[in-house]
Image (tube, rainbow, N blue to C red; front, side, top):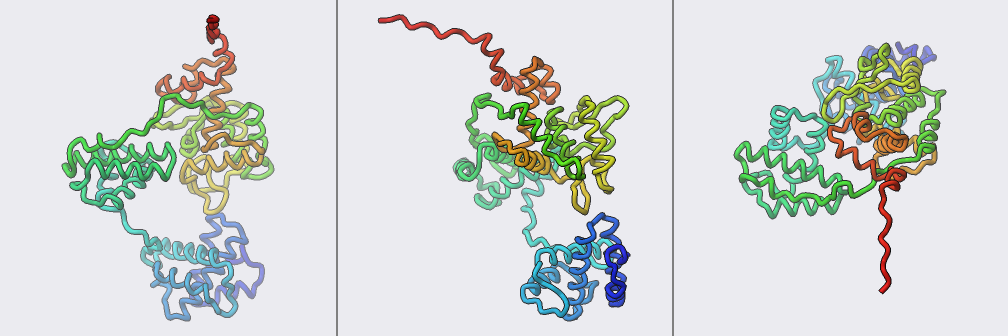
Length: 415
């Protein structure tokens, strides 16, 4: 397997001759199967070789590798004088060593190792997450967002819910709101109310304490949806380099955003089996977990085909879109889609009017449909809104229709 990465027979002989030569060759085989590029794989193999050499100098057996060993190796690199081994690219060396230890764990050579020194979640938070999964069917992504605010609360107020009071809860919300924006503050208050309801149900805090969490002031439909003009959207889509696998992937994603109005989270969850090529439909699971079918237009369908045929790497996942670097995995969250959209806007020299580039494209397709005469009811169906009230915000940007119903300003009679 070394021959896939090294041409020199002397180099291959050196790798095989050591006491851990078989482990390094299995590691190289694992890198090959995972799809690492040649230069990256060679760097990781070199890092693993360096780790083994250093461990041998310090009388550390390979089967005893743990998180502590990786930490010691990291410190060693700051003053490394190992003959024949470089130490300047310290970050990549540690990354390669960590990857090698992960391979050893997967092969059963070492026990599970933990390099994350973060303290475990508080017992109350763990119990809350289990309760939410069981009683409300909450997703892990939702609970991860809730956990941020709840962890901060337990650090500031304490982990004894019997001592929670109105003053401390409101002060926490006020302190938090000064550090973040409106949307993040609303997420914080929602998380606190759910947490306090859980504590109430478990009899661990005062009844109705959730009502003490203040409501974030936000007037409904007080703002305009942020969107882009049609010509700017076309420039963003055209900015993708169709000569590269990444460009073909990004164009397919941008078309799903700009033509079908899908959410970033919807795109992350699309599986290969969600596309019905014969019936020209693509299914997506929205925020309400309802499966919704969208028409697969010729433009969008062809872009996905181009990506699947000459862009999507072989990956051990059924997700439609995967990362462009080994190991090839599905996107971890919707944030990856927004990053792709934001980079496309930068390439096209288009200013994003607000945060969340992917959602701006969603707003743009809704605004465009409204101006072309599509009814709010039809737009609500396409966007997956459960209530037409959510869609009515787009009526504010339909200036031509608003001009037809605008009343003349009453004349002021002279005194």
